[in-house]
Length: 121
Image (cartoon, rainbow, N blue to C red; front, side, top):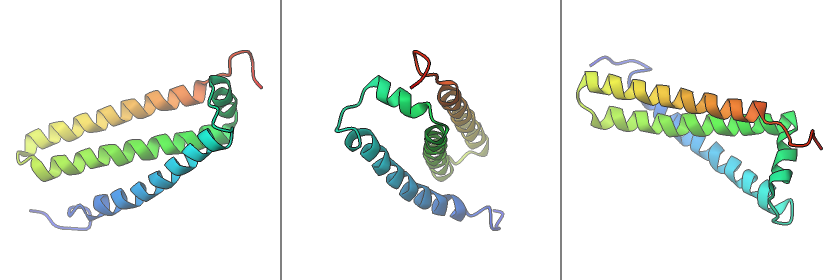
């Protein structure tokens, strides 16, 4: 078995914990903005107006990519822990990467191209 800085899985393990903390903070901020800053009223129009601002699109994109990377990194860690056969592990990790990239692209396209119905604010 090959040893080195990238082969032990320590970085993936550490990043999983750090990204989990950031996701928790982002989730709490998301709930506060969505449910408490508008007196608890969440409508499509309120969310659409928020998504019309580039700052909110950037925040949502960061949240999306961090969540996807965190989740799929967890899948990959489980695959490395429990799948013994190298070829099966390669196929499964490749499928996880493809699924993560596709979901990330789909989410990115949805957020970036979103238009407020009726032409804006």
